Amino acid sequence: MLTSFEQTIIEPARYQLETLIIGQELLGLEQTASTNSLIRERAFAGVSEGLVIVANEQTAGRGRRGRSWSAPAGSSLLLSLLLRPTWLLPSESFLLTMLASVAISEAIERETNCKVELKWPNDLLINGRKLAGILVELETAGPERLRWAVIGSGINVNWQPTQDPSINQAATSLAVECGKDVDRAALLRAILQSYDRQYLSLRSGRREALRQAWLSRLTTLGQTVEVELSSHNFSGVAESVDQHGGLQVRSSDGQLHTVYAGDVKVRPIAQA
Ligand code: BTN
Image 1 (cartoon, rainbow, N blue to C red):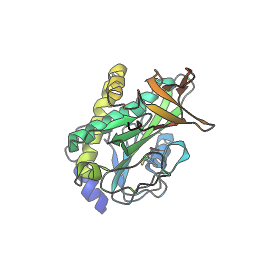
Image 2: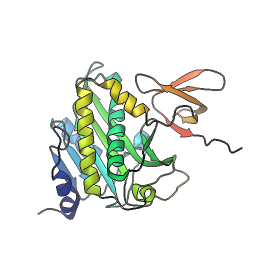
Image 3: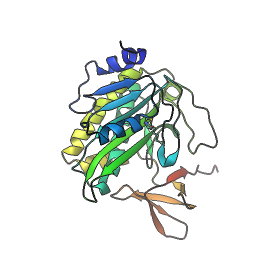
């Protein structure tokens, strides 16, 4: 028998799903520890690419840099998918963060008319507040080849996140920003279709088109940012993003730093 989550979200999303790869196998779970962890297990077991797992609730959701990711049951889209982009070099793997960011942004805009912006490296924002985050986990086969990638995303849909000042980026949801609840099944279907289009395009070699689509939404460049690394923090102006997805930040002494694994806080522009 189908669970209520399968009946109300997964089956309607599957109905008229037009994809070639993404979501051809689509699994909905009422509760799991982490959809990324589940997909990783399947990836190690040799499952084909395109598998998507969506959970109504996670008990041990994971975020970037060892953080946790939490959302009330039934409020969000918590999903992970498995790709086997063996045609990408490990040094090109930032393209997968770009792929997820662009695919999800396009689907949200199609379903809600709310404009989504991106903050380096992996945050989706609406009106400057964090709406969704992306966690990409990879397995390589030496320096030359990617074996698989798990792309997880947590999208705040129908709830009001508390504004916890200890959280790096103020959080929000689609319901808050768009002024009404959003149909999670329709949004899930739109996300899978958008992922599929973007993935097929990238697989056919259109790396630069993806990079441009991502850059056109990125609001980090030109801003004064505080960069948080595991060892220390520094501030500067975000100037560009290099070919590997590194953020290039110019500090006040004129030095250009390239950041690959870190977080940035955008400094609000001082009021005159
Ligand atoms: C971040 O902004 O730190 C990334 C958050 C990613 C959260 C999602 S929710 C679905 C998937 N499963 C997880 O355990 N994490 C990702």
